[in-house]
Image (tube, rainbow, N blue to C red; front, side):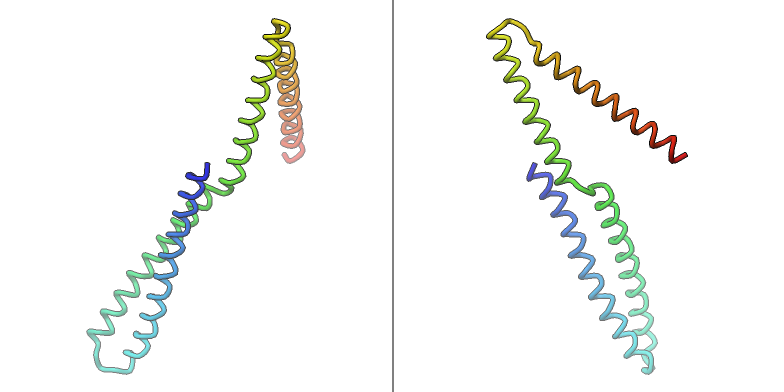
Length: 136
């Protein structure tokens, strides 16, 4: 759990760091270009202008990558918490079912739980259907 969160977090941090470096480089180049405008050194001015375009392109790509990463992983921590909670809940259900099987030879608690969950899912689907109808 922590591994995937730190991987995504590390990737996003790396992109932000790269973006910061590109922004600093871009700012320096703009300043340098401004200083070269009045000079007669056209070759240096053209070289700086080309580098500004390269850095600008890299900055755009970095921004796209950051947006894509943030969009793909909007709330990984929240999703991992939900998975952990559901896994714990499943372990509890299976543990109580094993105890019930050993005590009475049946699994009424599990059957009841499955039926409750099915009913809950059907109610959620109905609510979503009504919301779609209302929105349409």
